[in-house]
Image 1 (cartoon, rainbow, N blue to C red):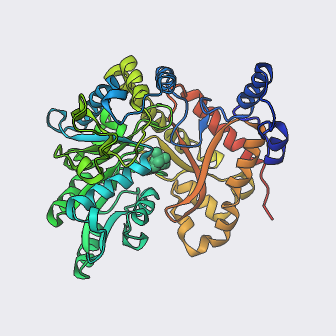
Image 2 (image 1 turned 135 degrees about the horizontal axis):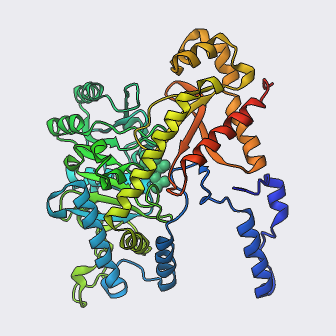
Image 3 (image 1 turned 90 degrees about the horizontal axis):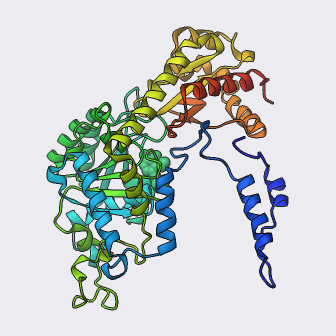
Amino acid sequence: MITTNLAPPEMLAAIPFDPPTGTGKSYEELGGLVDKVLLHAVRTGHPKYFNQLWSESDPMAVLGEWLSTTLNCTMYTYEVAGMFLFIEKAVLKRMREKVGWADGGGDGLLCPGGSVCNLQALSFARHNKFPDTKETGLFGLPRMVIFTSAEAHYSIKKGAFTCGFGTDSVIAVECDAVGRMDPAKLEAAVEAQVALGHVPLMVQATAGTTVRGAYDPLNPIADICEKHGMWLHIDGAWGAPVLLSEKYRGLMAGAERADSITWDGHKMLGTPQQCAVLLLKSSDGLPAQCNGVKASYLFQPDKPFAELDTGDNHIQCGRRNDVLKFWMAWQALGDVGYAKRVDTLLDLARYMADQIEKRAADGFVLTVQPACSNVCFFHIPEFLRSDPIAVEMLKTGNPDILKTDAAAGFVEKCKKVPPQVKMKMMEEGSMMCGFQPDHGLPNHWRFIISNPRTTEADLDEALNIIARLGDTCAPAE
Ligand SMILES: Cc1ncc(COP(=O)(O)O)c(C=O)c1O
């Protein structure tokens, strides 16, 4: 079972949530609480957990996580972080080598999550263009605009309002049929903004979009950035690990032309949350120039080894040791093991897509060929399969008919199926996967394959579960 399938009222009744107002619990009682926590938590290590962009943690990384929380050495100064700063340097350098930056040169920092990496990249881009904003803010400056694909992660909007640009400054560029940013549309959007007197600050390309797993074409985007003097940031929170794989690194051809890259260790690579990295091509000290305030009580310049302190590179003060777990896993797997992990996940996605295409008779239709390890598809349940729209969609294997006016009635029925199936799935606790409307299509399934212990047989069984539960659906009220 992947969950104990408790609905919120049952969950509230199952666990004594309030801490004791008097004396604390005995070890025996605490053991009972631990049992309940383990029983009712979602088992993200289950091979049929496809719900999000992360799953089971690598065992060596878990050991690293225990070590770092037990040792509790914050990362801001050499005097308390010591060797961990060298571990951080070694990991960041290896990641930059994988990007293809000469001799692994450049810079980088660990941030609390991919969203914060993207926010930090935006702030670096602003500092790079207008360093005075650190003291004077945005007053008196022209409007700065940021370009990203219409399928980019929502964190860019959060970054834009947090940095004071506002969400209206985020220009969503149209994507092609498989979900990649269209460079011609980007160029036109940049020129339109320049004509308005706005400053084109940054393009955030995506390597592995959240829903479809698409990789934006980096070389043509880099050409446009060079032409207009824009910072090129790649959000590879999900998909950058393909840089570890000889077989799949071509998906990110041109990555070495970026100014910065977000790359989460806690998604495809199985490091426990959180472990997110922002890599920088330049080693000109931008992080400390942008974020440093030289607090004299902590970063005393005359203290031993002060030159190794990293605190002023970050917006945080105290900082978790998020690198040890990543390093432990990398030590255990080596580059070879990590490449194999990535290959396994992306190969599995291609296997699943093939099976979906072979099972049109069971009501399956793929929405797009996988680039990363996201698999998006429809399952048309039996009660809808004789509808002429369904017949046509299953015959052609193309769901685009759902975007036509003629399909409006069918779409209304079709979009109600995944929520019904999801409820049945939660009740029986057999599997977890997600659904969403996307790319002009109504609710359909998204499987994320991020656990290398998942097998082809698990994927076959997962499709059988979707088909079985779907076929028990009836028209919803
Ligand atoms: C493409 C992409 N970028 C950024 C993020 C945000 O990452 P995090 O959850 O580590 O903040 C996500 C999360 O799903 C994502 O899919």
